[in-house]
Length: 93
Image (cartoon, rainbow, N blue to C red; front, side):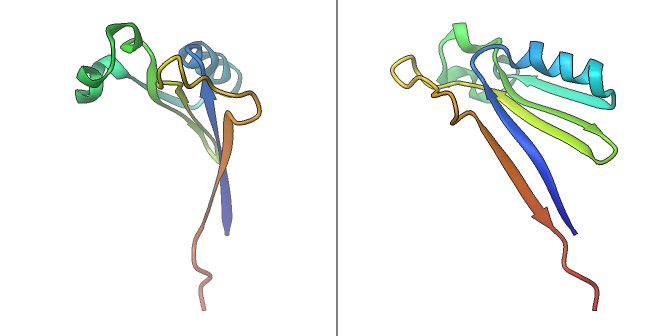
């Protein structure tokens, strides 16, 4: 059986977007800010409120997301800000 999970990249609005999706879809929402991880020392303080990982799960519905963390010289490009994870389990024989 194959399952898919959309993964979305935001440019500083991940928390707001995921809160909206959670309001619409319900389920469990978890979000981790960069500033709450050991990686924060590797980034400037203005990035510490960005979301390093967000996940919504409600039954078969799953969405994962993060905020863009790279330096301003590497801007995200529209159209390259989403992906779909496809996972599967072996068929029983």
